[in-house]
Length: 147
Image (cartoon, rainbow, N blue to C red):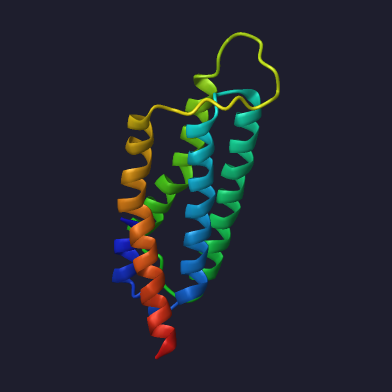
């Protein structure tokens, strides 16, 4: 939805590459968090790393808004979509915490990849609904800049 709103507001003619790059950074941060979640068993160590990544995502999201705000109007519907995008990673980290084993665990990460179905469930929608639209947006911004 966010990329549809960016297209409607003609992001390529306003904040352009600056904002679009930040979208790719945010996606990369959460993509890394997702890969780590899929590769390692829930533990205090994983939770700590995920919290750092989610905080990084939040800071980058704030930076993204600071870049966009002076150059284009951020309509209420887009602000609402951003609210959902801001809170979703925190909810995901809460879910990791919720599923941490009750028994005492060491601080080390334990490599325990999730089943293939879980990888597909997490990665395929992310690619189709987030990565691909972000790359299309970035290409649009890059093409406009080249004109």
